[in-house]
Image (tube, rainbow, N blue to C red; front, side, top):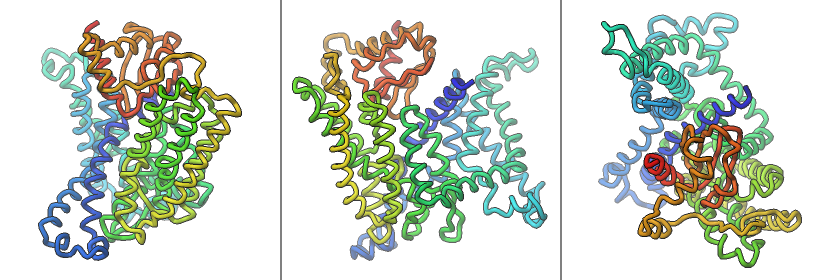
Length: 528
């Protein structure tokens, strides 16, 4: 049962990456549009002539802002599609279409239940539990949770009914045509269920948010620690998403509208030209010091402690991983480079330092948000460009410099003291490298451009051992028949920064190049 739950959570977390991958692009549009059209920015830099209301540039940037905003406004629908697409085993395109239909039906059903069956205002006046629950703010906003539930239900229906055969008189509706039909009815039922049950669920979610808020810096520390500790399991998306997108992350009134979720609050405040709430930003601001500065310090320590003959070998790997962390905030390649060398260094030192970073940023009232992760692009857009008076971004620089030194010397001490086998210190002499475009072209010219795909498949136990091959932003996620057949050393030799094998689930961390690697594996498998 424990393994099944873990597997289900992994699969669910993986499906989040498709809609989450949209956030950097949408956030870039929203950030640039909102930043350069904000009254505070225009007045501060005296740009009324080119960016004032009514100017051509103002109108263009407003379009950009609206286009970015529409993605965040429709995240629940996008999550419904992403979850259905990711969890459906076959006919994924049918699952995606069915998710759209089901979500629209759910939303219409929920709205109609509220308008025509429930009299919310009267129910709020009822003494006792019902009135107390319904008196809490906007309890009928299911948010991304609604989308995730719809997507999961549609995926289950797809897997169950995509091969169904109906009687001859109804045979036209058999198979894949039946899936969107049954999904539509499921959406209607979910709308009824949400209409009557969601207020209680919403009250519980909000209660968790209040609990975290009441714990103050201790709650922030727990959030930061758990967030980083779940990275190796790939379950961190499941953990942080409710804080970002639901009342667990807080609620706020912005321009007379109730906003739920830390990320939504920050974006609404930026669009309204208001100072950003550091209470909402405490779920984000702590990322910047260790992602932009801390990890490069750790990478430098690993480079300096590498064997002399291996320094050139690992320099490119550590530099690439560091730049990825600095620019995009994607940290798995560098985190996995020391996770397996020393779990104590990861969970006992790094996770604690990361959690303290969140606490320090909260204490200093830093209010810098993110779209995806804590890289320098988000820091510039949602910190620097918003202005010191709106985000108080300057302390990030000083704390970041301190974290660079802390990570460097702490890692240097642990690696030398405990002789940790970080990159370049391994006992084997296998080359530690990530494949480059040059490598690809050389292999292609030699007629063996799919050699790495062949090596990966072989290291996973061969084609017959593969059940499903998928990926998220940085990891190859593979379901195999027999996990004991997966060869960790051979997988690392293909350029992986880390490998996690748990029963039938194998995660191979390649970093941001993983989508291309997965596509090449798919192409290779088709030739077998």
